[in-house]
Image 1 (cartoon, rainbow, N blue to C red):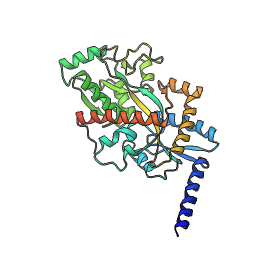
Image 2: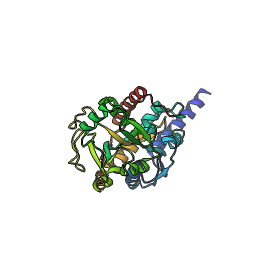
Image 3: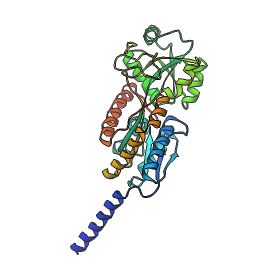
Length: 319
């Protein structure tokens, strides 16, 4: 009996190893838990195209939007951990929502990291007629009149909301939050001078900025960026330590074998390294990253801790 059991286990183990070595042998689903046309969707499709070319099998991008990215994330979380269902998402469903939502049907600490694909630095966009002409002036005026200025966000608990709360904490000011449902309506009201400011990434701000409909006071990077060489960093503007932005990463369901994650990561990194992809990302104001699973795990853990602190200190809760 024992020999029979050992034989069965050995056969199953050999089959699992063969499946991993043969990965991928059928189409791969890459779920983007955000609307089509957004930054995550654009980056995911660029990378999926490159992965398909390398593997000679389709990598199909699907948009499953809703509840701050949780609907799509939950679908991937419960998928078979064989590498054929991946999540390409933003900080929310990968690192933030576990600290933000009272009830979450998946455990963000159990994602199997595949790769950080890109980073889009945060910019502080303000209405064109805002009296403050610099970050320093904005802070001084906000301190003189607490609650005078407001900020738009993509919605409660989004990175634009949490970034503004982090800015409040570092700058020692009080702002009024005006939540919207997405970047589009928030940007429309910023251009119409119905709100004062919005923390966003260059994807949504470059066009209205260049058209003179808004102004950009600073960018949250260590050095000035080629796409916005005239815009100072927050450090140059007098706010030291304010760096970061939105990022897009690929993760796999809990229990995904390391060999599978490594193979998916290698293909994703090779896709990001393509000159045409890097150029397209640069045109969106994003930086191509292409991190290994180990690098991605370390980065995501740091982001999770960073935003948990902001959420707890600002007492931000989403039902």
